Length: 559
Image (tube, rainbow, N blue to C red; front, side, top):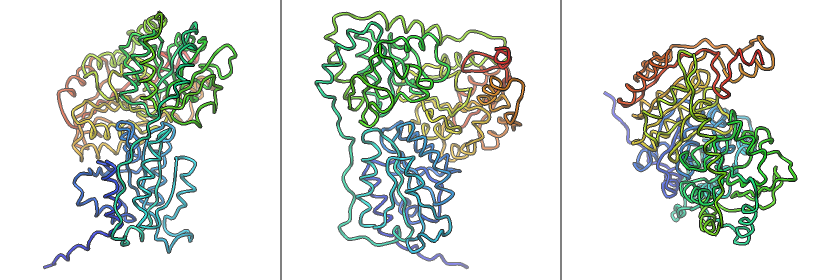
């Protein structure tokens, strides 16, 4: 008969680390456990205020942390082990950086005495992650844990939000600390009010413009920024376009909403942006995807003025030449703009005109495909709540939701601007944990889904309520689309042989259905909406049906 031995006490350093996280408001950690940070896992055992979500792959865990940061405005927190764990998680760090989302990745590191020998799974994390994050460092002294944690939070949420990576040597986590070592106070994002002079200069520039437009969404956008900027734009009749995958930055029902930029936008919106004599960019970096390769708006245009508002001064004037740069947080700028809007003498009709153009573009028209995805999204709009959170990764399939779905609440869109595949399911797990009373839908292509489909196990283990829609065309559809355009009828490396995704979901313990027609999808969604837990609908479509442009493979061949 075996007797259990008493557990050793949790090391001071690990307990202090977890206490510091709790002091900063951390209530959830995503992790794939590793022996390199066992003391932290032990410390978490006694902290009921922190929910520990055990994931199946570090890339999925990092995506969840990135999505959690996007929803809360506080850093999403992820713990992984060294070497393979860290390199797997690097995709989430890259997405958090390009998406301007706060996140902290903790990596269990080798013992300090083993460093610089290329020991088991050793990696120079500062060198590896440095180019992909705001700050990468290693905590060598347990007594400095409070300093590093507070700085990590401050760095992640200040200016342009982004990821921080901290390495945790094994021996440091197991060490004692000074008796007076304690967490530092809660770190808040610095208040960044816009310059009054800059705001006064902005108003006549907009008033004198014949065809102005705003492009919004991005770093530090939040519900207050959404409300105040929408009030401002509606007061003066300013058309408002959202940056790539930032469609929840304003309400689609706003009478001045002009649609979204990025891949497959409304051609009329593209022309409106190209012809604008003034662009007001608020929060958006005006990156390659939003601007279609720096052509929408044109990079250099002597006839156009650009007012760029961003919380990071390094972004202002870095790519597009600006006529007026305003360094401020999004909510502070929007609040001040709304206060000044009442001074406008007249209201422009351009906003309502742009909105009418978007309404026509965003209304799906029937087609001849057995499973009409445009009609499916329209049915979803009438079936699911307005504040449903839509989560997706990368792929041609996402174009149907970008065009036809209406992101009415905030947050309601979790989608990587970095174009990373495999984001949708992990993001949906994070959303289901963060907002258990809201409907959460993960939308994925077949290639996209199998990047992180294993996180269905995480969803079931943690009792997540979410719907997964897998759009299966047996191909890497986006690459196939470009392939057909560049090298017609020479298909290479883009065909896929897929499993039965409905059966796969059932094997995880979820409810599932297969839809090959629009009617079957409607029936399946109605059933899924009335259930709880994991629900997956496997949509089988023809490769001929492309989403973003409304074109087809045959159309690309003939074009």
